[in-house]
Image (cartoon, rainbow, N blue to C red):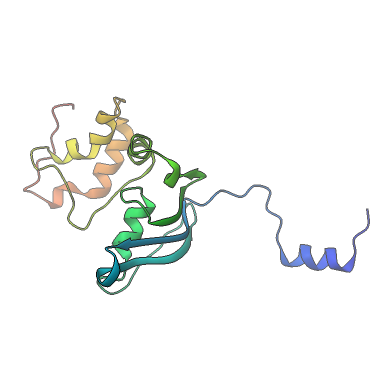
Length: 165
């Protein structure tokens, strides 16, 4: 097999990866519009963004710039006015609410600014709530890792014990 100069240039500038992992999430030409006419607010205006699996991304901007709207639409908590959202290779915008709920429960973790914890549950009960709702067994080694990383001993007023322990 012979290569032309054009083939050599292309292979020198475009690394050939044996297997490319799909992005963790992406939005293609996403727009979110609240209101209409004189009260219309474009929280997202034709946004295209990709978040690679295994990476960390900081989303920064002034209040009202669309950061929370972007995250809510990416996670399927809110619908786009137009555009498409993918989690992995799954089209979130094509899913019904039941499918999106299942996707969020099984594949997406949330950390809200206001925590959104259920006050009548212990810390542990809040952590394992998605597994309980899915009727799956709690992976105790995973739970031990989470507890160790949070360092609950620094928060003496938090009830950590769980009736499931």
